[in-house]
Length: 521
Image (tube, rainbow, N blue to C red; front, side, top):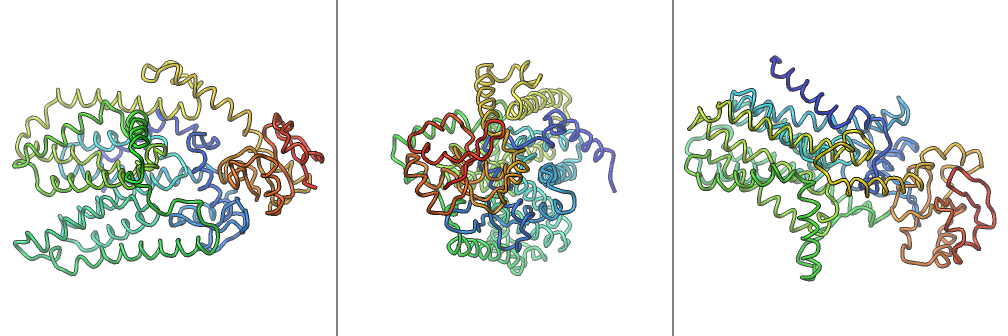
């Protein structure tokens, strides 16, 4: 039965979505911020849509010496979106909307959990929106990557796990396991909470179980093993599939910190602190949260032991992710999304302790007013950083007092440069078909040092500069002819004078805005 506070949560979620500009972003092309990985996700989906591929045999547009078959995370979202596209047409907003619903579902479950735990509507509303103020969550919620849906599923799994623990109803426990399985399949880093709960449950059964219940039965560990076994089996299939087809497109291993030289490590750490931590969570909220986390261990006698240990385990899990994927985390902010599962935990433990030991403080209106003001500032920061990644000329961005004008100016130049190069490719496909270029005719799209950015935009099979990125155009073109490229799609006409490329540009068959199309003879 829904309560008034449920509707209040949904209204506030709608308002924050409007603040973040989701109503407009839903219907625009992918942002240039980490466009590479966004395009990979969209490429898989487009190939499901266009080619009616088997669920377990996805492919991308990049086709060097193979047919582009490759795989990463469990493709259930990509495949589902492709089926919806078959009904509604190729509409990217459907993809964005589905990912949003996963995250919103997770935030709602966090709201329900906090309300049931604390019996306080303000703090129940505060916690999910505090988490949602994260700049990377604000950006990737309304996006195409699987990381944010993985976090949303982890929050859902945590809520139903807690319901199982407190109601002793097995249906909630098995539902939680199913959700965690789904989360781990689409993004393995979303298992931070699941693995922490497994360790806690293991300890409860073998170390500190004073009375036997259905929850402390040894059999309750079996579902965890099933989840881990199925996920392990999936990634074994992924390794085998990519080995037989196209490998090296998606990261399947580790990029640990210990393989780096000291000077490189220091340089990357400096960049991580400067760029990734503020993207992970605004510093105005992050440092107070760390102080609360440390304070829990000072007041450990008063803190619920379950929440205290859970905080520690999840924190150690986040540190482990940082160490194991350090080289990627320093430049790819989305690798940190599932570490956001840590953000609400210190506050949950603190508020639970206040509820039990100092209820007057938790209900104090002055504290709530200060928390509300802080939350508004954090949400404002999330809104500005999110809007800026799509439109630096946005009125909110132009008038903001959070981000330096020099930074917005630099991003504006960057976006304008990207538009000048790539914007035409979003609408070039009908023109290419009119020239007789079929979707499966292999093209060389240049300059493009990603796998799928320009190829997805055109919905065109082909190869990019990534095939041999460091080679001069003379050597590069010999390689492109060897892999069967029939056409050159040149989005930078200034390269026509390149001595290595010029000999291959004798047969111009079409021009579309800033893009020249040549047939390779």
